[in-house]
Length: 414
Ligand SMILES: [Mg+2]
Image 1 (tube, rainbow, N blue to C red):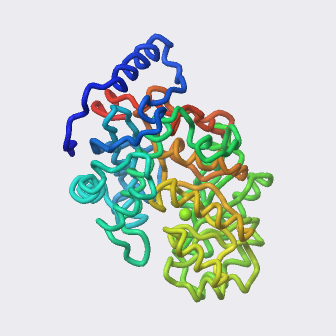
Image 2: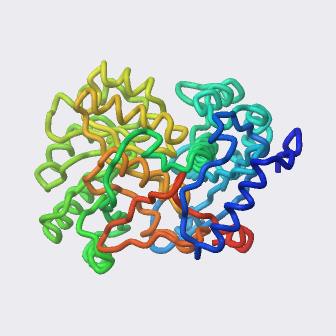
Image 3: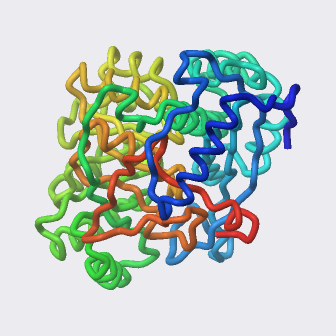
C-alpha cells in the first residue's frame, strides 16, 4: 500500500464531506449527486494515496483464457485500485490482467502500480488525467505501443471515478454526452467440441441472450461447422466471430469467405497483431468486415492502421488501451473515419464492467457488446451487483463510474 506524503488536513472541505456522508447514509443508500467542496471552489485536488487490492473471481463454464494446461479453471484475476485525494474524495478502478490473452499478470499489475506508478502520481492534480497518463508513460515507457496498458487502465478508471465524484457528475456528463440507458450483450460460445454448441446456445437463451460471439481458430473445419450450427440455431442473432489472432495468412484467406457463407457478420483479429501486410491482403477479399482487438492498444496505431487501410472496425475495450481516456479517443477517431465500433471486453467484473458500460452507453453502441463477465464470473465486490435482464445491462448513471464498492467484499473475496 502506498502512503501519501502528507496526511490530509481537517478542513472545511472535510467537514462538508462528512455532513454529506451522513446525509447519504440517511438516504437509504441512494447515490446522490454531490460535489467535493474543493472541486466546487475550482481548486485542484491532489492525489494523496494509491492502494491496490488483488481480487480473484471464480469462473463458471469453460473459457479458454481462464483454464490451466489440464483444462482446470484458474479463476479470473483482477487488481482493484483505490485512489484517495487530499480532501478524502475516493475513486475506484480495476485492472483485469489476462495472461493467456496478453502479457500482464496480477503480480505485474500490483508491483508496477506500487513501485512505479503510485510514486509519480502522488501529489499530482487528481483531475488532470491526461497529465497522469503522461507521468505514467514516462515511468513505464511504451514499447511498440503503451507499456502495461491493462495495469494503467486500473489507475485511469479510478481517476475518472474520482473526478466524477468530486464534480458530482457521471462520466458521460463530464464528456457532454447523453448516451443510451442500457447495453445489449452477446453470449460467448467457446465449445471444446461441436456437440456442446446447442446446449451452450440454449443456456444463453435461458439467460435472455439472443446474440452470439463465437471463438474460432485455429481449426477452419471446426470453425465453419461451429458457425453454421450457431446460425441455424439462432438465425436472427448477430453472429460475431473472434479468432484472437489464431490463423496464419493462408488459412485466413481460405476460411474467411466460408465463414461469411456460414452466416458470420464480422470477423475479429484473424491474424496475430503484428502481421500488418496480412491484414492488408485479407481486406482485399472484401468477404467480411475485419475488426482489430489485440493489435490496437493506443489511438496512435489506430490512426496508422486506418491510414494503411488495414481494418473495417474496432472491437473496443477500455481495459486493453490504458482505460477510458484513450478508448474515448479511439471511438472518436474510428467514427470520424466511418469505421465500425463494437463494444467488447476482457471478461470484466464489477468496476471494469461499469467503465465499459459507461463508455459504450455514452457513445450509443447499440450492437450487442461482447461483455461476458456476467456470463463467466461469480460474485461481486459491489454493494449492488450488476444483473443481466433479458440479455441487457443498465448503464450506471451515478457520479463517476456510478457503482459503489463494498470494502468488506474486497476483504472477504467476491
Ligand atoms: Mg477479441
